[in-house]
Each structure stands twice: as C-alpha cells, then as structure tokens.
Amino acid sequence: GISGPYSNGAVNIALLPDGVTPVTIANVNSGQGNDPNNPTCPAVNPEYYVNNSTGQTVAFGGMTVVLTARSAVQCGQTYHIKLAIADAGGTFGDTDTAYDSAVFLEGGSFTSAPFVPSLTPGPGIVGNTMFESCFPMELTFLRVGEVTEADTFQVSYSGTFTNGLDIVPALPEEVIFGAGESTNLFSFNAPIDEDTDETVIITVVGISCIGDTIENVFVFNIAEAPFLIAEGTPFSVDCGGAVEITPTVSGGYGNYTFEWGGNLGTDPTILVAPLSDTSYPVTIFDNCGLSTFTEVPVTVIPAPNPFSVTVEPGPTVTGNSIQESCYEVTFTFARSGGTAYPDTIYLNYNGQAEVGSDFDPLPEQIIFQAGENVVSHSTVFFQDPDGLESLILSLGDVSICNGGFSIADFTFQVTQAQALVTTGTSPTIACGANTTLTAVATGGYAPYTFEWPDGSAGNTYVVSPTAATSYAMEVTDDCGNTAVATFNVGLTPPPPLNMSILGPNTVTEACGSTADQHHPAAGRAGCAHTGHDLHGHYHQWGRLRSAPATGHT
Image (cartoon, rainbow, N blue to C red; front, side, top):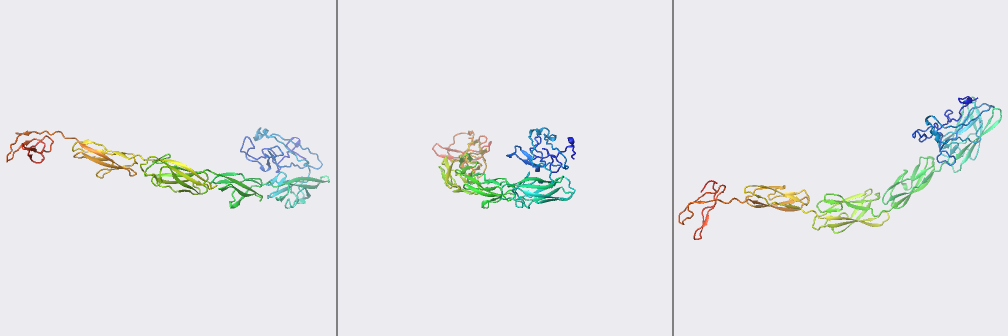
C-alpha cells in the first residue's frame, strides 16, 4: 500500500522527474523577476519552466512542461487521488498570493500502464511537443511497479507521423527492460521537413495483474520548426556619410549567421556608405541550417551645400574681421554630413579685397580626403592704405550624391593695421650736463626695435651735447614698418658776462703797443678783444685765450 507523511498515510506524487522534488513555485521558475522580494533571484530547474507571456490559449504568464504524477500500486486495490493547490510560504512569504495558479489534467491520462513514455526536456522539446530541429532528443520509457525481473513490452505507433521518416531512427516496436532496470532511453531526431504538424500515438500493450490484456495510449506532437524571420529595418544616412545596418531576426534556433550580398561580409552589422538609395540583400542561417532572406533598405538624405569656412582667431583676427599684417591668417574649411568619400570645394573670390594685391591666393580647389571633415589653408593680408574692404569666399560644390551644383558665400572684413607711431621729446639741459632720451612706440605690431644715430639699439639713449642738437631715432615693428622720431636737445644760456676795464678807457694810436688788464668773471674760460678806431679801422687784440677763473692777463 501507500504510506506517507500526510493524513491517512497519503503521499505527494506531484514531483519532478527526479521523483523527489515537489512541484512548487520555488522549485520551478525562470529566476529573475520570479520573486518580488528578490528581483535578481537565480533560476531553479528552468528546464521544466515554460514562458507563456505571449501564449494565446492559456491565460497564465508561465507554466511547467507536462509532468507525470505516478505511484506504484497493488493489483486489485482501490486508491484515491486528491488534488490540492495552495499559495507558497517560506521564503516567498505572502507574495505568492499575487499570482493566480491552476493545475490542468490531461483527459484520459489516468492509467495503470506497465511503463510510461515521456520526452526528456531539452532543446526542441516543450512538454509533449517535439519541434523539428537538428537537436538530438530522448524518449524515456519508465517501468512502473516491480522491476526485479527482465521484461519485454510490445509497442505500436499510429498518428499522422511516419516512423523512420519523421522520427529517425524509427521508434522501437518492443521495449526491453533488463532485470532491475526501471528506465529505457531511446535517442532520436525529428528532422526538419516540409510537412505540417503531426501526431505520434504510442500504444503500450500489457497484461493486467488479473491476466487481462490492457492498452495504454500516449499522444505526442511533432511541430514544425519555429519560423526563421528576418526583417529589413529601414535606415537613413546623410549624403556622403556611412551608417551601420543590420536586419532584425527572430525565430529559428538561434546562433544566427549572416551572408551579405556583394561580398560585404558575414558580420551581423556592416558599415555602408551609399551615394543613392540602396537595398542591401542578406541571407540569415540559424543553428539548424534554416535560412531566410531579406533586404535592408538605406535612404540617402541629400544635403544642401555641406561646406563652410571660418577664420581661426589670432592676433589680427576677431570674429570675421581680419587686420592687415605680415602674419599668416588661417582659414578652416569644414564639411557637414558624411565623410566616407573624398570631396572637393571650388573656391572663388568676390568683394573689394583683390587676390594677389591684397592677399596671397588660397588653393582654387579645397580637397577633402575620405574621413576628413576639416581642411585648413593659410594666407597673408598685405598692409596697404586701401581702408576697409570686404572679402567674399564662394564655395562651389558638385554633390557626390545627385550631381547638383550649389554655392555658399561667406563674408569677411579686411581692415587696416593701426599705424606705427613714435614721438620725440625736446629737453633742455645745462651746458656740460647729459640727459637720457626715451623712445615710445604705439600701433603697428610689437615687438619694436629702436636705432639711434650712432647705431645703438634700445628704447633709451644718453646724450651730452655742447650745443643745441637734434637726434633722429628710427623704430621698426615686427612687420618691418618704420617710423622716425626727432629729439631736440637745447642748452640753458650762460649768465651774462660781468667784466670791467682797469685804467683809461681811451688808447692813443701810436706805433708802439699798449696793454690793459681784464678780470674775467668767475667760471669764464677767456675773452677776445675787438673794436674800431675813430677812423673806422678794425682792430683785434689777440685771439680768444684761456685764463683761470681768478687770474688775469
């Protein structure tokens, strides 16, 4: 009889195929999301779990595969089977109350067969259904009751399948159990073919415990392989650009491989750069050799003239304003959109600034190599007296996608440099003193160099003239512009000469000579003697001579 831990000696026969583990939500689940209290809980026995979130016939999000409840019984005895279902406790607490639960019994499945055939869970098997595939499958024959003796059972097959064709090799017509053996495994394949769904009906013939012949019927299904579906999701790309494309694939048996037309490779995702609307063919294969074909369309978005030009900031550049100088000015040409292909700008000039006389020419063609979106070229705007001028750079483009020609204009202002200016001073110093002349320059382009009359440099110059003198200094800026400043150095006038004649102030003309005495004022170096007689004759008495400040002659 049956002897168990429940009331009236009952036992739980709702067990997993190991014959030990009870069927509960904690023992059969997909793991993540199963326990609201632990969203990262690991899966438990997931091979017996079926995700039914998209199911159309059973309104439950998940279920088990078809499981068999079995128990050994004694011939001629009466047994009672009770069905009980309850919310789980334990680690799930009260959370299981949030889930609806049900048990579905297969009609006519109560039997007392000598053995029970069941499909071993694995790839291509869901419950009692075999999906045509390339995977090996197993049918387990489980002997019920006494297993001490060897035994052989006859098995017949019916249904819409063809044994040996839809199942390879053919299922056996007899099942042999050795002494002590309770299971017999039969390995087979359900190859992919063009047939529709089929049924496999297994009839087991046995002798009951009272000697009667009994038949037990078990039904399995062969389903077509899940369709391998590929969709060519549309993509778009800017003219001249590149885009990664891939098809959307579902169904089949996974581990997809790809073959792109035009020898574009075997990667799931490829990089393409069409110049016009293009569809890219691709064939997809799954793990079992199923294949499907699709095309991935790519639309090219034509762009207006994709080019622009700016001038890089620098000592003579502010925004779009360029000041004439000796320095290079760099123009940066850029293209928007794609860079997968080389492209060319055709450059023209407009405005008042003239190429050659106002600035050095830029290249007539600005060439972008594949992958480049920026190209720079430099020029010099010459210093001249023309005043404010405009420069218009016209960028011509022949579209690499549709061949259309377009022009984009960009305007810049060219201004004169600030004039180089330097000024001198006009100091006055005492006779015999010195002074430092300091040069100051503005405008032009620093740094400045200074040159004084004797060739010396620097912005200062020390002088000690003995008479009023003018000094010319030349300044040169970094661009070679020059300016001249004049420094006028004057001398302070000496004090008036204070001198008297001792003796008569009248000299009588004669043939001899006469003398007088002079007392120079302190600090005077000497004096000269000149005069006229009463008859208008000029006389000079000696040249300028030196005399001590306190002496006399």
